[in-house]
Length: 392
Image (cartoon, rainbow, N blue to C red):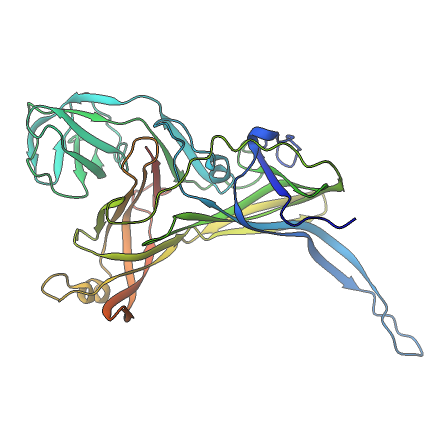
Protein backbone atom coordinates (compact mmCIF):
# COMPACT_ATOMS: atom_id res chain seq x y z
CA UNK A 1 0.00 0.00 0.00
CA UNK A 2 1.28 3.47 -0.89
CA UNK A 3 2.21 5.89 1.90
CA UNK A 4 0.57 9.33 2.09
CA UNK A 5 3.16 12.11 2.10
CA UNK A 6 0.83 14.48 3.96
CA UNK A 7 0.43 12.07 6.87
CA UNK A 8 3.71 12.63 8.67
CA UNK A 9 4.63 13.60 12.21
CA UNK A 10 7.79 14.09 14.26
CA UNK A 11 8.13 13.83 18.03
CA UNK A 12 11.22 15.04 19.90
CA UNK A 13 12.22 14.67 23.55
CA UNK A 14 15.47 15.36 25.39
CA UNK A 15 17.43 12.30 26.48
CA UNK A 16 18.56 11.74 30.06
CA UNK A 17 21.22 9.28 28.86
CA UNK A 18 22.89 9.93 25.54
CA UNK A 19 21.63 7.70 22.73
CA UNK A 20 19.01 5.99 24.93
CA UNK A 21 15.45 6.06 23.57
CA UNK A 22 13.39 8.35 25.82
CA UNK A 23 10.12 7.45 24.01
CA UNK A 24 8.59 10.77 22.92
CA UNK A 25 4.82 11.07 23.33
CA UNK A 26 1.98 13.18 21.88
CA UNK A 27 2.98 16.25 23.93
CA UNK A 28 6.43 16.14 22.28
CA UNK A 29 5.02 16.64 18.77
CA UNK A 30 6.77 19.28 16.64
CA UNK A 31 4.55 21.56 14.56
CA UNK A 32 6.74 22.05 11.51
CA UNK A 33 6.89 22.58 7.78
CA UNK A 34 9.34 21.87 4.95
CA UNK A 35 10.23 18.56 6.59
CA UNK A 36 12.93 16.51 4.88
CA UNK A 37 14.59 13.39 6.22
CA UNK A 38 17.50 11.30 4.98
CA UNK A 39 16.66 8.13 6.90
CA UNK A 40 19.76 6.11 6.08
CA UNK A 41 22.92 8.09 5.50
CA UNK A 42 26.46 6.84 5.88
CA UNK A 43 29.35 5.46 3.88
CA UNK A 44 30.49 2.18 2.46
CA UNK A 45 33.71 0.58 1.29
CA UNK A 46 34.08 -0.99 -2.11
CA UNK A 47 35.25 -4.60 -2.15
CA UNK A 48 36.99 -4.01 -5.50
CA UNK A 49 37.99 -7.55 -6.39
CA UNK A 50 40.56 -8.35 -9.06
CA UNK A 51 38.94 -10.84 -11.40
CA UNK A 52 39.36 -12.01 -15.01
CA UNK A 53 36.24 -10.10 -16.09
CA UNK A 54 34.55 -6.73 -15.78
CA UNK A 55 31.89 -6.00 -13.19
CA UNK A 56 31.07 -4.54 -9.81
CA UNK A 57 32.37 -6.17 -6.65
CA UNK A 58 29.72 -4.67 -4.41
CA UNK A 59 30.29 -2.75 -1.20
CA UNK A 60 29.79 -3.12 2.55
CA UNK A 61 28.35 -0.28 4.63
CA UNK A 62 30.59 0.88 7.44
CA UNK A 63 28.42 3.56 9.06
CA UNK A 64 24.74 4.42 9.30
CA UNK A 65 23.12 7.57 10.66
CA UNK A 66 20.13 9.83 10.07
CA UNK A 67 19.78 13.50 9.14
CA UNK A 68 16.73 15.73 9.12
CA UNK A 69 15.79 19.34 8.34
CA UNK A 70 12.57 21.23 8.99
CA UNK A 71 11.20 24.64 9.94
CA UNK A 72 9.12 25.85 12.87
CA UNK A 73 7.41 29.19 13.26
CA UNK A 74 9.08 31.64 15.64
CA UNK A 75 6.58 32.47 18.38
CA UNK A 76 6.44 32.45 22.17
CA UNK A 77 4.71 30.03 24.50
CA UNK A 78 1.68 32.25 25.10
CA UNK A 79 2.73 32.94 28.70
CA UNK A 80 5.76 34.98 29.78
CA UNK A 81 8.12 32.89 31.87
CA UNK A 82 7.06 29.63 30.19
CA UNK A 83 9.41 27.93 27.74
CA UNK A 84 8.25 27.78 24.11
CA UNK A 85 7.60 24.43 22.49
CA UNK A 86 10.78 24.75 20.41
CA UNK A 87 12.88 25.10 23.56
CA UNK A 88 13.60 21.35 23.48
CA UNK A 89 15.18 21.73 20.06
CA UNK A 90 17.28 24.68 21.25
CA UNK A 91 18.80 22.59 24.02
CA UNK A 92 19.65 19.86 21.50
CA UNK A 93 21.47 22.60 19.55
CA UNK A 94 23.78 23.36 22.51
CA UNK A 95 21.79 26.17 24.12
CA UNK A 96 21.17 26.62 27.84
CA UNK A 97 17.70 27.58 29.05
CA UNK A 98 17.17 29.96 31.99
CA UNK A 99 13.63 30.62 33.19
CA UNK A 100 12.67 33.74 35.14
CA UNK A 101 9.16 32.71 36.15
CA UNK A 102 8.04 35.99 37.76
CA UNK A 103 8.66 39.67 37.12
CA UNK A 104 11.55 41.39 38.89
CA UNK A 105 10.54 44.72 40.44
CA UNK A 106 12.35 47.58 42.12
CA UNK A 107 12.89 51.31 42.35
CA UNK A 108 15.49 52.91 40.13
CA UNK A 109 18.42 54.86 41.46
CA UNK A 110 19.58 58.25 40.24
CA UNK A 111 20.80 59.21 37.81
CA UNK A 112 19.08 57.81 34.76
CA UNK A 113 20.15 58.86 31.27
CA UNK A 114 18.47 58.98 27.85
CA UNK A 115 19.56 55.40 27.15
CA UNK A 116 19.92 53.79 30.57
CA UNK A 117 18.32 53.06 33.90
CA UNK A 118 20.14 52.45 37.17
CA UNK A 119 18.47 49.49 38.80
CA UNK A 120 17.95 49.04 42.54
CA UNK A 121 20.93 48.46 44.79
CA UNK A 122 19.82 44.86 45.29
CA UNK A 123 19.85 44.07 41.55
CA UNK A 124 22.08 41.30 40.28
CA UNK A 125 25.85 41.76 40.54
CA UNK A 126 26.37 39.60 37.43
CA UNK A 127 27.24 41.46 34.24
CA UNK A 128 24.62 41.05 31.48
CA UNK A 129 22.24 39.27 33.85
CA UNK A 130 19.29 41.27 32.49
CA UNK A 131 20.55 41.67 28.93
CA UNK A 132 17.85 40.77 26.42
CA UNK A 133 15.04 41.33 28.92
CA UNK A 134 12.41 44.11 28.83
CA UNK A 135 12.12 46.76 31.51
CA UNK A 136 8.96 48.83 32.05
CA UNK A 137 8.55 51.95 34.17
CA UNK A 138 5.41 51.26 36.20
CA UNK A 139 5.17 54.49 38.25
CA UNK A 140 7.05 57.69 38.97
CA UNK A 141 9.06 59.61 36.40
CA UNK A 142 8.72 58.08 32.95
CA UNK A 143 5.77 55.89 33.90
CA UNK A 144 4.35 53.94 30.96
CA UNK A 145 7.63 53.65 29.05
CA UNK A 146 9.40 50.39 28.24
CA UNK A 147 12.82 49.50 26.90
CA UNK A 148 14.85 46.53 25.70
CA UNK A 149 17.98 45.94 27.79
CA UNK A 150 21.03 45.51 25.54
CA UNK A 151 23.69 45.66 28.24
CA UNK A 152 24.01 45.50 32.02
CA UNK A 153 26.88 46.30 34.38
CA UNK A 154 26.57 44.30 37.58
CA UNK A 155 28.85 46.66 39.51
CA UNK A 156 27.15 49.95 38.67
CA UNK A 157 23.67 48.38 38.27
CA UNK A 158 23.25 50.37 35.04
CA UNK A 159 21.14 48.76 32.32
CA UNK A 160 21.50 50.19 28.81
CA UNK A 161 18.44 50.15 26.55
CA UNK A 162 18.09 49.80 22.78
CA UNK A 163 16.27 53.08 22.11
CA UNK A 164 16.31 56.35 24.08
CA UNK A 165 13.65 57.04 26.69
CA UNK A 166 11.25 59.86 26.00
CA UNK A 167 11.63 60.83 29.66
CA UNK A 168 14.67 59.38 31.44
CA UNK A 169 13.87 57.58 34.72
CA UNK A 170 15.09 58.85 38.06
CA UNK A 171 15.01 57.80 41.72
CA UNK A 172 11.19 58.02 41.77
CA UNK A 173 10.80 55.53 38.91
CA UNK A 174 9.55 52.09 39.83
CA UNK A 175 10.29 49.40 37.28
CA UNK A 176 9.39 45.84 36.36
CA UNK A 177 11.52 43.41 34.36
CA UNK A 178 9.06 40.91 32.97
CA UNK A 179 9.09 37.14 33.33
CA UNK A 180 11.05 35.50 30.53
CA UNK A 181 13.00 32.54 29.23
CA UNK A 182 16.55 33.13 27.97
CA UNK A 183 18.52 30.88 25.61
CA UNK A 184 22.30 31.23 25.44
CA UNK A 185 24.77 29.12 23.45
CA UNK A 186 27.12 26.94 25.43
CA UNK A 187 30.18 24.83 24.75
CA UNK A 188 29.12 21.39 25.93
CA UNK A 189 31.22 18.67 24.32
CA UNK A 190 30.87 14.93 24.44
CA UNK A 191 27.99 12.73 25.52
CA UNK A 192 28.10 12.94 29.32
CA UNK A 193 25.86 16.00 29.77
CA UNK A 194 22.18 15.08 30.15
CA UNK A 195 19.48 16.90 28.16
CA UNK A 196 21.82 17.99 25.38
CA UNK A 197 20.61 15.43 22.84
CA UNK A 198 17.21 14.28 21.69
CA UNK A 199 15.35 11.18 20.63
CA UNK A 200 13.35 12.02 17.52
CA UNK A 201 10.60 9.82 16.12
CA UNK A 202 9.65 10.37 12.49
CA UNK A 203 6.57 8.56 11.23
CA UNK A 204 5.43 8.64 7.61
CA UNK A 205 1.95 7.13 7.35
CA UNK A 206 2.71 4.11 9.52
CA UNK A 207 6.47 3.68 9.00
CA UNK A 208 8.42 4.88 12.04
CA UNK A 209 12.06 5.94 11.97
CA UNK A 210 13.87 6.47 15.28
CA UNK A 211 16.78 8.90 15.56
CA UNK A 212 18.84 8.68 18.75
CA UNK A 213 21.42 11.02 20.27
CA UNK A 214 20.34 13.77 17.89
CA UNK A 215 22.13 17.10 17.92
CA UNK A 216 21.91 19.95 15.48
CA UNK A 217 22.02 23.59 14.55
CA UNK A 218 19.47 26.33 13.97
CA UNK A 219 19.06 29.43 11.85
CA UNK A 220 16.55 32.27 12.25
CA UNK A 221 14.88 34.17 9.42
CA UNK A 222 12.93 37.42 9.75
CA UNK A 223 11.80 39.22 6.61
CA UNK A 224 9.31 42.06 6.23
CA UNK A 225 5.77 40.88 5.39
CA UNK A 226 6.70 37.28 6.24
CA UNK A 227 6.28 34.99 9.22
CA UNK A 228 9.51 34.55 11.22
CA UNK A 229 10.85 30.99 11.23
CA UNK A 230 13.57 28.84 12.73
CA UNK A 231 15.31 26.42 10.37
CA UNK A 232 16.57 23.28 12.09
CA UNK A 233 19.03 20.62 10.99
CA UNK A 234 19.68 17.49 13.06
CA UNK A 235 21.95 14.48 12.82
CA UNK A 236 21.40 11.39 14.91
CA UNK A 237 22.25 7.74 15.41
CA UNK A 238 20.22 5.20 13.47
CA UNK A 239 17.54 3.56 15.59
CA UNK A 240 14.98 1.05 14.42
CA UNK A 241 12.83 1.40 11.30
CA UNK A 242 9.55 -0.46 11.60
CA UNK A 243 5.85 -0.36 10.89
CA UNK A 244 4.02 1.53 13.65
CA UNK A 245 0.73 3.39 13.68
CA UNK A 246 0.85 7.14 13.29
CA UNK A 247 1.13 8.53 16.84
CA UNK A 248 -1.18 11.08 18.40
CA UNK A 249 0.17 14.62 18.11
CA UNK A 250 -0.67 17.39 20.58
CA UNK A 251 0.09 20.80 19.04
CA UNK A 252 -1.85 22.89 21.56
CA UNK A 253 1.28 24.48 23.03
CA UNK A 254 2.38 25.91 19.69
CA UNK A 255 1.37 29.55 19.30
CA UNK A 256 0.55 31.42 16.10
CA UNK A 257 3.35 33.77 15.02
CA UNK A 258 2.92 37.38 13.96
CA UNK A 259 4.27 38.93 10.79
CA UNK A 260 7.49 40.89 10.65
CA UNK A 261 6.31 44.50 10.30
CA UNK A 262 6.74 48.07 11.52
CA UNK A 263 4.08 47.54 14.20
CA UNK A 264 5.33 44.16 15.39
CA UNK A 265 9.11 44.41 14.98
CA UNK A 266 10.68 47.25 16.95
CA UNK A 267 13.62 48.48 19.05
CA UNK A 268 16.16 47.74 16.32
CA UNK A 269 19.65 48.74 17.35
CA UNK A 270 22.54 48.15 14.96
CA UNK A 271 25.92 49.32 16.23
CA UNK A 272 24.21 52.12 18.14
CA UNK A 273 22.00 53.24 15.24
CA UNK A 274 18.23 53.18 15.78
CA UNK A 275 17.10 54.45 12.39
CA UNK A 276 17.68 51.37 10.22
CA UNK A 277 14.78 50.35 7.95
CA UNK A 278 15.01 46.57 7.81
CA UNK A 279 13.90 44.38 4.94
CA UNK A 280 15.49 41.04 5.77
CA UNK A 281 17.44 39.56 8.65
CA UNK A 282 18.77 36.06 9.10
CA UNK A 283 21.36 34.56 11.39
CA UNK A 284 22.72 31.05 11.61
CA UNK A 285 24.32 29.51 14.70
CA UNK A 286 26.41 27.39 12.32
CA UNK A 287 27.13 24.62 14.78
CA UNK A 288 29.65 22.13 13.44
CA UNK A 289 27.84 18.82 13.89
CA UNK A 290 29.85 15.64 13.40
CA UNK A 291 28.76 12.02 13.29
CA UNK A 292 31.63 10.01 14.75
CA UNK A 293 32.05 6.23 14.83
CA UNK A 294 35.12 4.47 16.12
CA UNK A 295 35.69 1.16 17.85
CA UNK A 296 33.89 1.38 21.17
CA UNK A 297 32.01 4.63 20.60
CA UNK A 298 29.40 6.11 18.29
CA UNK A 299 28.03 9.60 18.78
CA UNK A 300 26.99 12.91 17.26
CA UNK A 301 29.08 15.80 18.58
CA UNK A 302 28.91 19.57 18.30
CA UNK A 303 32.57 20.51 17.93
CA UNK A 304 32.44 24.26 17.26
CA UNK A 305 30.23 27.14 16.08
CA UNK A 306 30.76 30.34 14.11
CA UNK A 307 27.49 32.28 14.05
CA UNK A 308 26.97 34.48 11.02
CA UNK A 309 24.13 36.50 9.59
CA UNK A 310 22.94 38.72 6.77
CA UNK A 311 20.71 41.75 6.68
CA UNK A 312 19.33 44.17 4.15
CA UNK A 313 18.51 47.72 5.24
CA UNK A 314 17.73 50.90 3.38
CA UNK A 315 20.93 52.76 2.45
CA UNK A 316 21.41 56.21 4.00
CA UNK A 317 23.86 59.07 3.62
CA UNK A 318 27.26 58.94 5.26
CA UNK A 319 26.21 61.86 7.46
CA UNK A 320 23.26 59.84 8.74
CA UNK A 321 25.28 56.69 9.44
CA UNK A 322 28.77 55.94 8.19
CA UNK A 323 28.60 52.19 7.73
CA UNK A 324 31.67 52.29 5.47
CA UNK A 325 34.01 53.48 8.20
CA UNK A 326 32.51 50.92 10.59
CA UNK A 327 33.38 48.13 8.16
CA UNK A 328 36.84 49.47 7.20
CA UNK A 329 37.84 49.79 10.85
CA UNK A 330 36.37 46.41 11.82
CA UNK A 331 34.24 48.15 14.44
CA UNK A 332 31.95 46.08 16.63
CA UNK A 333 28.80 46.97 18.50
CA UNK A 334 25.47 45.76 19.79
CA UNK A 335 22.75 44.28 17.65
CA UNK A 336 19.23 43.97 19.06
CA UNK A 337 15.67 43.60 17.81
CA UNK A 338 12.32 42.92 19.45
CA UNK A 339 9.60 40.99 17.64
CA UNK A 340 6.10 40.95 19.12
CA UNK A 341 4.34 43.34 21.45
CA UNK A 342 2.12 41.09 23.61
CA UNK A 343 3.56 39.37 26.69
CA UNK A 344 3.94 35.66 26.06
CA UNK A 345 4.58 36.16 22.35
CA UNK A 346 7.61 38.46 22.32
CA UNK A 347 11.00 37.31 21.04
CA UNK A 348 14.05 39.47 21.69
CA UNK A 349 17.38 38.89 19.95
CA UNK A 350 20.43 40.57 21.44
CA UNK A 351 24.06 40.24 20.39
CA UNK A 352 26.60 42.30 22.37
CA UNK A 353 29.44 42.20 19.84
CA UNK A 354 28.57 42.20 16.15
CA UNK A 355 30.82 43.07 13.24
CA UNK A 356 29.48 44.16 9.83
CA UNK A 357 31.29 42.90 6.74
CA UNK A 358 31.11 42.95 2.92
CA UNK A 359 28.58 45.77 2.41
CA UNK A 360 27.09 46.15 -1.05
CA UNK A 361 24.18 47.89 -2.71
CA UNK A 362 21.05 46.22 -4.04
CA UNK A 363 17.68 47.34 -5.34
CA UNK A 364 14.24 46.94 -3.78
CA UNK A 365 11.29 48.62 -5.53
CA UNK A 366 13.65 51.29 -6.82
CA UNK A 367 15.04 51.98 -3.36
CA UNK A 368 18.77 51.50 -2.75
CA UNK A 369 19.42 48.87 -0.12
CA UNK A 370 22.58 48.12 1.81
CA UNK A 371 23.23 44.40 2.19
CA UNK A 372 25.84 43.23 4.69
CA UNK A 373 27.12 40.17 6.42
CA UNK A 374 27.24 39.93 10.21
CA UNK A 375 29.68 38.10 12.45
CA UNK A 376 28.56 37.37 16.01
CA UNK A 377 31.50 37.39 18.42
CA UNK A 378 31.67 36.34 22.10
CA UNK A 379 31.79 39.40 24.34
CA UNK A 380 32.73 38.37 27.87
CA UNK A 381 35.85 36.61 29.11
CA UNK A 382 33.89 33.37 29.59
CA UNK A 383 32.23 33.49 26.15
CA UNK A 384 28.98 31.69 25.35
CA UNK A 385 27.14 35.00 24.96
CA UNK A 386 27.37 35.97 21.30
CA UNK A 387 23.61 35.62 20.74
CA UNK A 388 20.87 35.79 23.33
CA UNK A 389 17.29 34.72 22.54
CA UNK A 390 14.77 35.99 25.10
CA UNK A 391 11.15 34.82 25.05
CA UNK A 392 9.00 37.17 27.10
